[in-house]
View 1 (cartoon, rainbow, N blue to C red):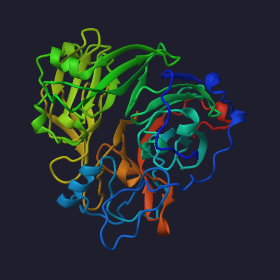
View 2: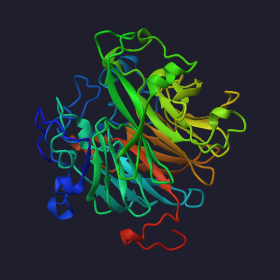
View 3: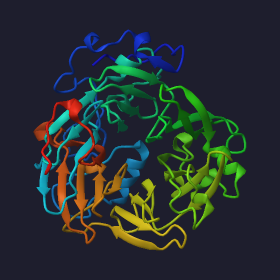
View 4: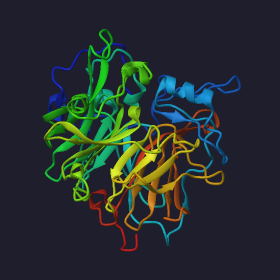
Length: 450
C-alpha cells in the first residue's frame, strides 16, 4: 500500500481517466494476498480486558459468537455514535464462508460483494468459492487527492456495481467513484465525494449520492453543514446534473427538523444512505411514485423520501416503526422494504410496509436463537423465489431466509484479523445475481443446475 501523507496536493480536475494517470494493468504490482499493516484503523468498544486492536488496513469489527441481545448496551451505543461507522462487541465466529445451504429452498445464483478487508469486490458462488475479484488502491487512483488526515475509508469500497461485461463501478466512501474493467484496470475516476449508493440507468447514465459542505446561516452562521447531493453522470463519469437534497426539502411542504433535534457531531444533516430510481409500479396509487422519481433513505431523519428530479422537490416522505434505517427500496408488489438498524426492541429488522396506508405487512427481526443486529450499514434483497437476502454488515454475515423465516443460506466473511483472528471484516453489501447473469469472461463454466 502507498503510504498516506498528512497533506496532498489538490486535484486539477475531478474526473481522471486511466490515460491521464498513465495507469494500465502492467503498471501496477499484483495485489498482496493480505493488506499491508500500516496503521491502526480498527475502532470499537474497548474494555480493560480487551487486547489492543490490530494494526491493519480496512474495517474490522468484533462479532458475536453466541445468540443473544448483548449488542444493545446504552453506554456502548453512545460510544459507537461518537465514532461513526464502527462497532461490534464480541470475538469473531470460527465459522467462515458458507455455513448453511439448503439447496432445495435457497434461490440459485452468484453473489457479488464488498467487504471491509480491502479495496476490492468479489464474485462468489453459492458455496462461497471465489470466482473473480477486482481491486484498486485509493492512492494509486488518486495520488494527489487533497486530504487533511488519513481516512480508514480509503482502504475499502463501500458499494460496487457490476456490469455484464465484467466492468465495475466502486465507491470509496465520501471521496470518489471509479470505474474498472474486468482486469481491475482503471477506465475513469471522479473525485466527487460519492458515498453509500449508486444506480446505473438503462441508457448508461449513473445516479449516485455525493456530499457538499456549505454554510447555511439559518442553521448555523459559523459552522458549515453537510448537504447530500444526487449526482447524475454519463457513462464516462462526466457530471450531467446535481440536485441538492436540502434545496428539495426547502422547496417542498416537508420540513427538515431544526438542528437542535440532531446530534451536532460534524453537522451531518441527512446522512442519506440509499438511492433507488422508481419504475412507476405504484404510480397508479400515488403520483409521487412515478417512474424516474428517486427514493432515498435519510438516516438522520429516520425518514424515507421521494425526490422528483425534474421539479427538484421532495414529493413524499414516510416515517415508520424504524430507526437509523438503510437500503430503502420498492418491491414489485408495490410495498416498501428497508433495513431497520436500531428499531424499537434492541434488534435489527428487515421490514415491508404498504407505503400508502403505512401498515407494516412483514418483518424479520431475529430471535435469541437466531440473533440479528447491525448497528450500522446493512442491506436486504427480495429474491425471485420470494426469499429475502439479509446483510448483517457489522457481524460480517449474510443470510437468506424463506418467507416463513427459516434460514436457507448463511455466509460469514472469511477475512479475519487480530490475535486469534478475533476481528471479522465488515460485509458492506452482498447481492444475489441471477443464474443467467453472464460471467463467461471469468473463464468459469457452469452447468444448468448451478
